[in-house]
Structures are given as structure tokens and as C-alpha cells.
Length: 157
Image (cartoon, rainbow, N blue to C red; front, side, top):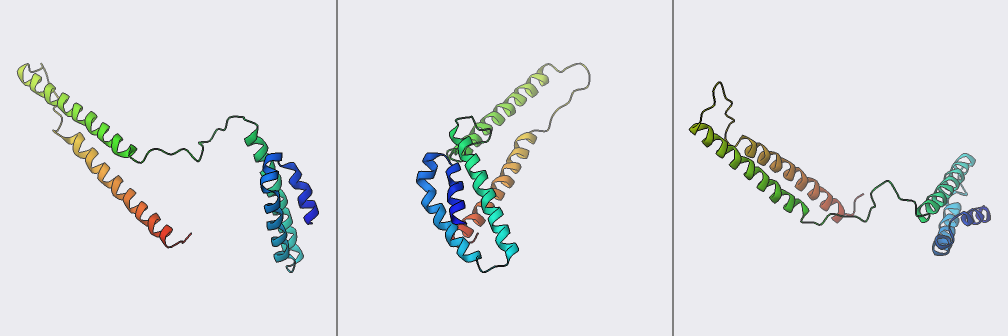
């Protein structure tokens, strides 16, 4: 079975095969030794799973090396760590500008009252709602980060 597996490794692109063929063969040989004493159905399931994984992996590597643009975000892209701080500062500036605009509008409407009924929004309703939302979201984010940090430190998966 190892010879068939090594033949199927030829489906991978040359660079990938040169880098990983020996390691993949060694791992497959070790797994074959582990499954050799199992029942026939277990062995067949193992060979089907490994063969389909090998075929799918070869297809994926050829697709990746073909240069065709991927439709998913690349895993190595990360936002800078200070992004959430800067976005919060920008949002606070926008909210402050809106509040100042409402204050100017309210003072202008006091000088020249409009004819008919008018709507006077509650003062700082927008700012307090956004502040409460951010506190809840940042609190939940901090809680998730703390749990992930503890799990990583304890090496739990």
C-alpha cells in the first residue's frame, strides 16, 4: 500500500513533492503500522480517507500554484493591533460632531422657532447608547480573549 501511496504523491506539484514527499510517506507508513491490526472495515476506511485526502490535497496545491486569484481572505493578513483603538477614536469624533451639530441646531431653532410642531431629540441619547454598546462589546471581547489566553496557556485544545 505504501508504494501506491508514493505513486499517488506524484500528483502533487514538483516543488511541494520535493519539500514534503519524504515526511508524508513516513507519516503514512507509521499510520499503516497502527491500523494494520485493526478490522478490515477500519483499514478500508483509513485507506479511502487517506487516498481522498491525498487527491484533494494535490488538487488544492495545483490550484494554489496556478496563480488563479482566491476568493477567500488570506490567512496571513492581520489588522494592526491598534486598529480598534483608532476606529473608536474616529467614531468618538464623529459622534461628537453629531452632538455639536444637534446643539447648534437646537440653539438655532430656539432663536427662530419653526412654524408647527417640532421634534426635539433627547440630549446625548446617541452618545450614551453608543457608549453602552461599546462597553458591552469590549467587555465580551475581553472575556473571550481571557478564555482563549487561559486555554492557550494550559495547552488545551
